[in-house]
Length: 196
Image (cartoon, rainbow, N blue to C red):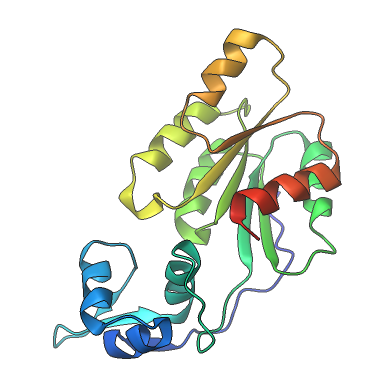
């Protein structure tokens, strides 16, 4: 089940490295280095000049705690990968009346892997024991992909055995959330992870 709570933004503004640098209050050389290090996503014109989409600039600024009065910030993106329909619905409802969040959900580990690349969430809420995939495998694939290095991952689990819980904590996630979790607890944890 896929569900988007807020609409995707219209076509974003595109900036040169000089314009992006000015908006961020850094030098143009710093912005070019960020592009070359792949700290910020950028396209290239046929003439070899970099162009940075507004949402990529906003992501870069958010990740580096740079205030950007000139750039429009987008909502935090959250992807929920949960195969239990009732829990998935509860997690979605946790954000239904919250502003500043765009939320999608899937019950498939395979689809979660696809959506992480396409939707580009800031946070993946991952049921670690999905029916079609081991969630730890999804974590490993995300962590090995340089383009997804800034994606935060919170494993959601009902695991109570200490050894298995420790394995989940050690698999590369940013946090582990124990089931059951109330909507307010989930929102609080998400806000802490995102710095929202």
